Length: 271
Length: 271
Image (cartoon, rainbow over all chains, first blue to last red; front, side, top):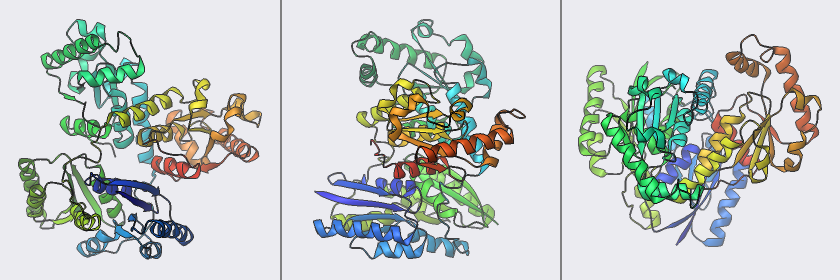
């Protein structure tokens, strides 16, 4: 069974996609064909989208699911007139919120991901520059400014998690790869010792690490089962011995790794 | 006026934050004190959070606003028993969705940002590696694999937009900074010519560019008004002459730059 889904927003569509996907992932047996249409911010654009929706209905005789975050009532009314099953994520909650706050919504478009005030922008860029400049063990000098320093074996997910933290929360996230050399001593590298309270470990299952490394360097010693196995056991021994908090990131997405570690290490977002 | 807000989720909380923030930004005169509590995935954790909420009510005698995405009915019931104004972002739509789809929700936790299937993970990492390896004009050789190549003056927002596209949509996004040398010829650098159909320009207002550059190199020629002015006019002349699509990114967030350009250039997300 296939079901057409439209995600329609007057802004980026990020909010609508996020909640729409959350809801749809709860229905496993159904094949959803999703289409995201952002920046529907005029009645002309709404007309075109409404036609698209009605076309799908004409062809399939099944109502498409339509998730919308539209601030302008005229635009959302036009969409609601289509032959579709509408989930209005915004107005559903806006009326009760107005009542509870005893205040009127400003009905201004694109405020969620569109408020690009200079200070927030700068904080994001600063965090991103810091993270890019302290990726993969480069520039050991700047760890005093780090909010967190990820450590783990090569390809355990450090770089993407750091970049996500920097972009999403303005966190200064460095990372340092524990290599063969570091691990053979079974103690922390000298350069990390002074920052022990900022360290957070990433571990990973053997099969996953091997698969990731094989994608990148097939048939190498680096991707071999024995090498991966050895590095993982050594790194976990090190984490435990040095009492460094760590998580096994195998079954987590980048978003989960970042938010779980933020919570566990009590790291404050900068905006 | 100040109002306490709790954003509670059994997963990352990204969805709840996104919609909660969307709604709250519509009420401008009110000072919201927000607290995000992710991974509330047991009744014990729910108890603790419920206490926190009730404590705020006891102290302020004003009901906190509580935005929740909780899959487990037992947990969400416990939260709904607090002295708060609850916005249940999930169950509000789940019942009508079940009816429309004639299917039962699986009520499984953390599926939105937690589904870390190997293929998607790999696509994200590949895109991220590509983007990091083709940032700021390095590695000109790989442009044939790019989905898009951002061009613009230094500090016009190319790197964060590229990284966001890579992380969020798996897009292979390269970027090339147009420097003084490139601009003085008023034509495209030789290395970009073969990829003209992949180019997208970023421009920026004079005041904003000057402010960003001044943050980084105060009192430099690079940050001077005349230098910024000259680069911006030259780059816009170039975009127009070469018919390269471009946007002025001054008033846009990173999310907006990325999603607007994806829409304008019709770039397909890879997952």
